[in-house]
Length: 169
Image (cartoon, rainbow, N blue to C red; front, top):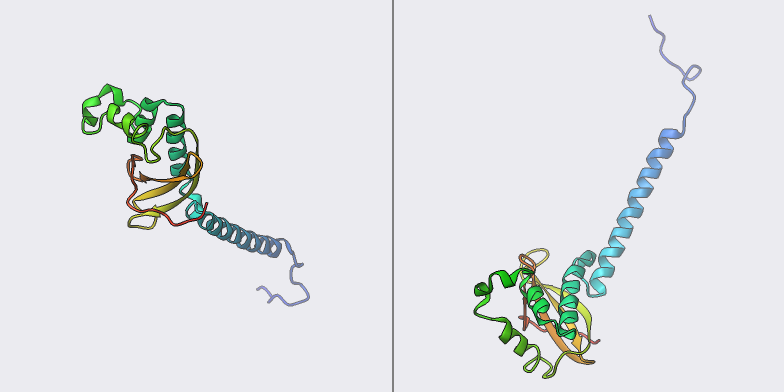
């Protein structure tokens, strides 16, 4: 027969479990706070919730880098997200490289060859939590705003974008 445990023969208090529990709770609160700060900061800075639009901004930046370098074949590949486009040019017969090159040189949105650019901001567009695409605002040749649309599903680009963003660079 065992005797009931009383205060006289209770095990000694071990603070380890309580300390671990407290540390886990503090860690979770700090993690949630940091996640909230990063989420809000990305949105306020114009790069999407949790900076989710940075990859699309990078794609637009690479596109304009290729235009500045006058590497229209590379820019065309970025535009269509098809690095092997030359293997099947018939797929793009509605908008061939020659027309694309003309559109981004003589008939460019800034009416001159592109010599400099800066990606300013981006905004999610379309339906769903993260939208169907991203509008990327790019300042070209020192002041002209160009809005590129990057499709989330296939990473292809479109100009002009369906909307223009209102912002002050």
